[in-house]
Image (cartoon, rainbow, N blue to C red; front, side, top):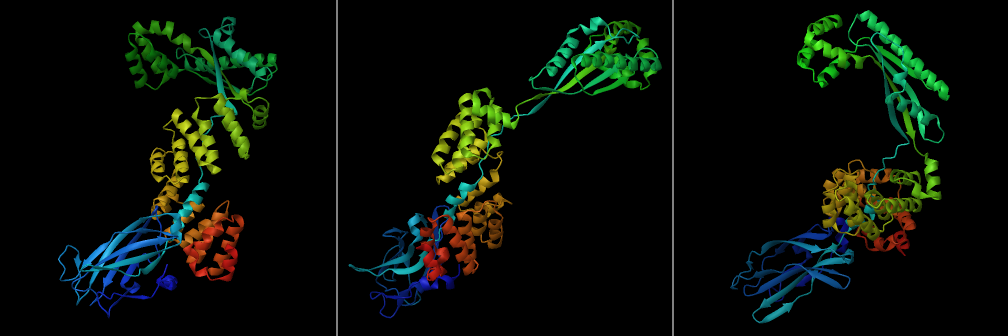
Length: 566
C-alpha cells in the first residue's frame, strides 16, 4: 500500500517542545514507519520505527523518553521506551547532539487482537529537565491494523479433510484348483482321481456357484495338461494333448450336469521340465545338485533326458517320486465373490445396519451427499466396530466441514486413541486446531500427517496462520481454494490470486470478499464494490468487518460503500 493511499490518515500537526527548543518542532515527519500501514501476520503486528531528532531539538541538560503506543477502541498497548539525553546529562541513554541532532531505530512487535483493526500508532513523548516532567501531546504516526490474514479463520473452513477409506470390493476374484494325476503313458481320467479331495473340492465350488444367492459368479475355467519329461518328445506331446482333451471332457460333463455355462481355456506342455526342476529342488534326492546342474547345462529336452538317465543311482528315485507327479492336468475355476450392490447396501442400512460389515458401511457413506445420512452411517459403523478408528475419523471430518471444531476434536481424539499414527487422523486434527486458532497444536499434528491426502493444503493453511505467505503459496501448489488465493494475495501476487478465486469450484461469501480486496489493491474500485456487494449479500456479518477494514480505506467516503455496510 502506497504512502499516497494513506497519507490523508496521517496527522500533520506539529509539537513544540518548549523545554528543548522554542524553534524546533517534532512532528510525524520525524518518524518513518515500516510498514506504513501496520499489518497483522501470524498473530503479531511488527513495526520498524526510524526516528530523526532534528538539530537544536535536544536541550543539553534534559532527557526525553519516546514510547510507541498502539491505541485501539478504548485500550492501548505500549512498546519499549527509548531514552535520549542531552550532552550535559550524565547517564546511560543515547546522547543526542544539540547542534547535529540524531537518529534511532526501534523494532517493535505487538500481539494482535481483533479490536486493533480500528487503531492508530502514536509516539508518546515525555521530557525531563531537572525535577520538572512534561508530558507532551501524542504524535500520530501510522494507521492500523490491516488484518487480512485473519481471514484464514474463514478460509480454513473450506479445506478438505482426509477421509479414511474403505476396502469394500463388489467383486473379489477367487480361484479353486484341482489336479488329476495320470498313469504312465495313459490319458484316461480314473475314478480314483475323481474321488480325490482336490477334485471333490473343485466340484463343490461349481455347485456353490450354481446355487442361488451364494454371491458367486464364475469367470471361466483354465485347464493345463502335462506329460513328464521321460520318453520321446513327439509321443509326450501327443500324450499331453490327449490328457488336455480328457480333462476338458470331464469338466464339461460336470458343467452340463449342473446346467452351468462358462468358457474353458485349455493348453498343454509336452514335457514339464519346469515342474521337474521345481520338484527336484524341493526333494531330498541324494544327487539333486548334480541333476539340477545337468538341467542348467543342456537346453535340448532329449539330451537332458539322456544325461539325467545316466545318473543311474538317482534315476530310480526320480521315477518313483518325481515323474509320477508330473503326469497331470491342472484345472482352475476362476470366479468372483459378489457383494451387495450400491442400492442393496443403502437398502440394508435402512432395514438393519447390523447386517453390514465395516467395509460396507464406510463405503456406503460415499454413496450419498447427504451429510446427515453420512453421519448416521459412520455412527453405526463406529458402534458396530468399536476398535476401528476410521468411522470416528470420518465423523470428525464431517463435524469439521460443518464448522463444529469442538465435536470434530472429540471424535478425532477418540480416533487417535485407536490409531495414533494414522496420517489422515492427524491431518484432520491439525485442521480442527487451526479452526480454533491453535497453531502450535496444528503444527504438532501435521508433523505426523505427511502421508495424508491433502497434506499440502493443510500445510498451506498452517503457514498462513504463521505468517509464512510465500511458503504457503508453494504448499498449495495448484490448489484452487479461498486459502490458496489468500496466500497469494498476502504474498502480493494479485494476478494469480484473482485467477485462483475465479477457478474455485464452490465460491462463497469469503471468495467474494477476497475478490473485493484484490480489486481494491489493484485500483479497480468499481469491481471491488461489486464483489463486496455479493459478499455481504451472501453473508451479512461481513458488513461489520468491511466497515473497519483498511483494505477498503479508499472507499470509506464512497456513498455506495456506506450504503453497503449499513
